Picture 1 (tube, rainbow, N blue to C red):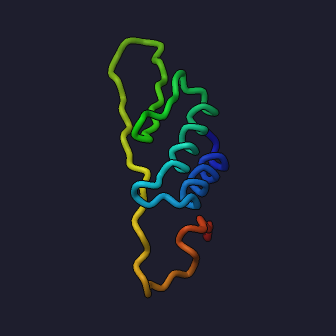
Picture 2 (tube, rainbow, N blue to C red):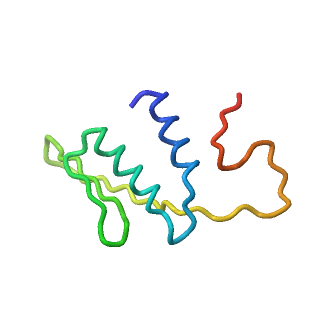
Length: 91
């Protein structure tokens, strides 16, 4: 994955509302990216969790990545230079 694609994917995730219990849009975006990256199998289970499998070419250890997709709210009154869900890039 090149840098631009990775940054775009991260921005997409930041911009999608995903409070606890309403993460489906983020899960769908993750599923889409896994499919585009060529994962061998990708599906969303009955709980809304995305599962992706890349079959290894050689025998060996298995790697598992497990992460949550929900976000917490923004504290009122906290000063932000940019909208925290705008995914603004600033050098």
